[in-house]
Figure 1 (cartoon, rainbow, N blue to C red):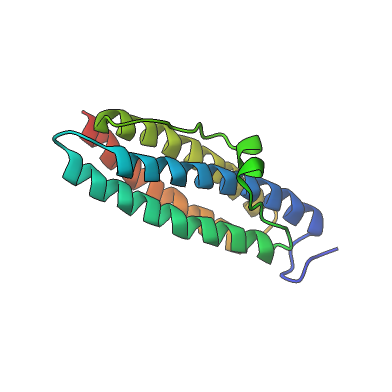
Figure 2 (figure 1 turned 135 degrees about the horizontal axis):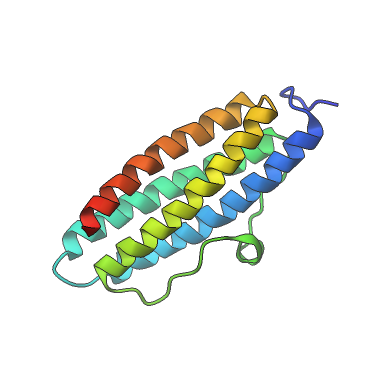
Length: 155
């Protein structure tokens, strides 16, 4: 049986589950970024305050895209923090005011996200789900470049 977009229903359900995990990761990551943006202190305040805002605006867009992809696959996106916290692979960050510490945590979070995106990319390829492949491919390319830049910042 195939769903309305032509993907095997079992594979679409598996993809929806993995996308919900990614959605949970992005939701917690988003809130971490907001906290870094609000609470950063020190000499690099202006630079990092702006950069963290850029990151959380991007995460906000991705959250919506992921949820809509789940719906396209005929799944149901999670929408409560209780659900997110039960399955996320991103740890909550609390009371981070040091810019370097915040950037290090962001690098770790992006590494977690890209690992999940690669797993979803593989599953989507096996399911002939070009929509999810395209979405994950775009996310991976962006994240790789961001990780390179953040790692250069930390050196």
